[in-house]
Image 1 (cartoon, rainbow over the protein chains, first blue to last red):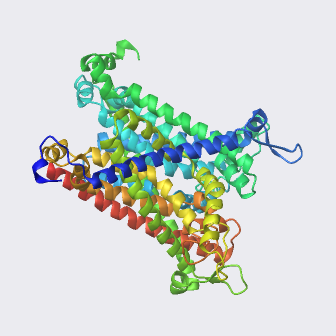
Image 2 (cartoon, chains in turn red, yellow; image 1 turned 45 degrees about the vertical axis):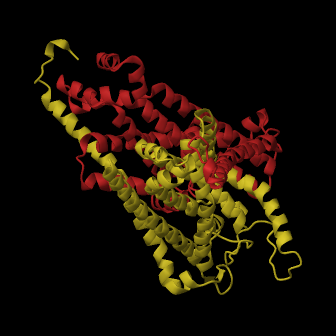
Length: 308
Length: 314
């Protein structure tokens, strides 16, 4: 380019800019292609296996059927028991960190250990759960062992989400409640927790997603049982029996080279994961406290909360 | 509550009691995480060290022969450790650039509508269970790798054929699996860069791309380092997905060798191991645990430094 043609108005094109822009677009489209490819492949290969019998029967060589009803039930058991234990613990920890503790060494220690817990890989949780809950506490291979192990795994998730939710509750709520004579626990119970509930629920749903997808932490703790309970007592006793979740069953089918069954389970898992993603998105959009304030005006929201 | 007996001071005793109990319960919940980490650490060390004494630290950590079930068992896990380290390194080398550029795309380049397509895709990528990655890798990547292997080693007589289940395959699966972590953390780091920086750079005549690579990314450095460290942690701890695709025999981690990772060693042998063999598997768990703890400490340091830098600028 000759110097006499340089003008402020003509844009000089840089080759490196073009290459880097292309690279950025390439990487982003790679991410989309990966998702589309994986989901598409699983749907195409799995859709033939998924039907009513697949969802409502259990694996049986006598009837020559393969179904995942038992595994679906086990997954449900583990989700419910894990959440029953982990949710109160996680919320309690978050309330302590946000409302009670003064900043200092103690808080830093709790936050560091929570961070550590979320960084430990699930296979380590699996080994720990096997020797601690399984052997030391004599729970063996059981749904309870699996649920206790998963409690450790999802605790950081619930704690952190609750903390975030509590932080979005304006201080004026706290001061208002305390100012008119509520005690701290009463304030937390009637003002803070209801206001933070959408955030807490989002955390719980994310935790469900984590539990549904988990396999390494369960294979040595919850085992691989797939039988449906036959009576009401059996339904209770099932907690102490081995029960494999969907992912475990899928892994076992895979190692036995039954790929069609495995893809069927993979499709069911993907549908669950997709549902959970949509639900969290819906919740965060609908109940975002800050956005609600913008839409309705802060005053009104405070009023409705206090009048409850 | 009976209205007539209501008094502000009347039930203060019961109230105080409730308050105290609530406070103690919350404190206990807070300490649960601390207790859990301590118990896990104690158990991992208690279970992992006996084998180190029985076999010998050097023989385990630096031995290269792994034959736990033979008549004269040998428990060298050096190749397993190297596989995890090298495999993780390669996965991060592939995953981080792709992840960071995707994050740049979502935060800086893409029009909101397009970013609205990429974001749910990334969220779904994060939600897909690891066994599904394993299955897809096994049935798509392995055959492709086998073709590549046949092409690379055509006519070679010394090559051990793996049928496509090799280190490279596992590395690719791991690279995909760390993508969501890298993308999410780097995206929020990029978004946290003050707008003034970008405006100033653009006003000085830098192009958009120059601004991104010379101003925004360097300012988001600590966030991106956090993303890398988290990616390393995720990759080194992944078990089920690579269990299927890595071939699972103990070899030096060359790209086309069938290899075994720390995690896959535990998954594939825990079920049938006994006695000393099982203890050595716990030692492998301890080695992985030590790696994770180091990563956590580094992460803590990086995040603290990032927070300090952030305060400095503001």
